[in-house]
Image (cartoon, rainbow, N blue to C red; front, side):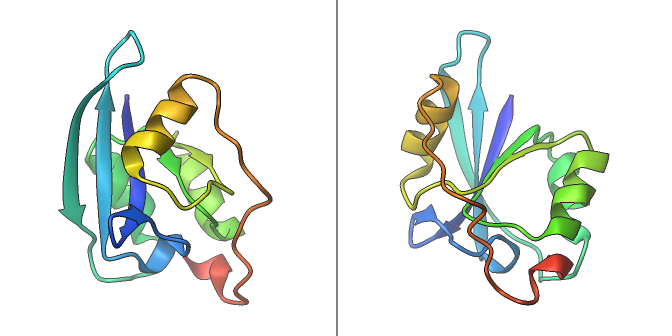
Length: 117
């Protein structure tokens, strides 16, 4: 599994569509983190991130908030989205998810323009 987490200052970025980079966390069958790579995000373009992350083998996105259109686009690519995650390090977020301990709140996307992320 490859988990993508949008980054800002080394932790989860609260607004998914405008993050500068992503942590890609690879895991094994035993739910252990095997590798972390940080990659620069492409310039913001509506609808691009689901395709771009799918091309990198991502199967799960952990984020603070995401607009409805982006959620639909990720679903079309077969990528699961966990929204409402707290601001924390990618390793802690991945471990919490993998061990069934992820505590989320409502989708944190409160911007009026989130539908075009």
